[in-house]
Image (tube, rainbow over all chains, first blue to last red; front, side, top):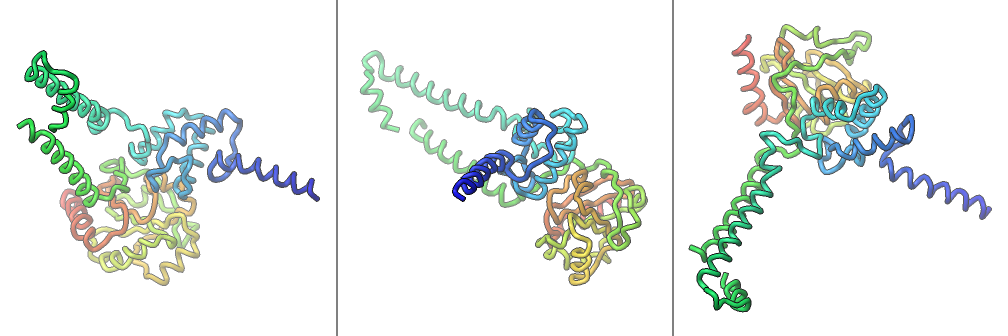
Length: 150
Length: 180
């Protein structure tokens, strides 16, 4: 009896790993390589219904439909890029977690760099000004005191 | 001037956050812009809800504009928009086509019997396969399709009286004015 229980528990434990890896339901993959490719691709795609979840993780019906469709397209021999294009043609760039670089997304891509450069410029200007005002007598301690001024 | 700099920086941040809040209240952040806008609607061939032996294709519907309304009996917001559609259907100016999405036919028929049926034509996509080509990701969604089969407007979410008056009717009017 104990032995049977142990086997059942072990089997359950093994299942838990599989369930976790596939999030929702087992899918009929041809081989492990296809499964890995599927996992990799669906993790880069956004569920249209629940936009903070990937297609791989989401439980929404539309995510399940799209997972099935992606597998179908894979079985038809389409490449990852072709599958992405297929989805973008229907659900726009929203479906991609990695937004493509184009006119509408320039700010998204380079905005942080602009802010960093702007901030760096302000710091640099402030430091130069201090150096000029304080002259050679400026010490590190005085710099810190000046810093507290603002 | 230098002393004002941090304050100015702070105010700029406040303005940025304020803009973010304003921006997110005036549009639905979950609405996905359809890439189909001003492009031909995808080809489809779906059975009629009440006569499943007969299919309706995109070609069958060419020649006159229609509003394709994606609905389902399980969809709560569809119940919200349904009275609006029922009241508006006779004066809409275009044919109202019901697209029953991922629904059991019996459930759909029961729902229509209970809530009323404003649709001139009803097609059923039980598997939701064709809906993927339309970029449907929920219900309700509505597509305004012109006589040439081109998508002219899409609304995601329920058609409220406000949406009807400020968006849908003007879109229909603009379409009919261009090609009656």
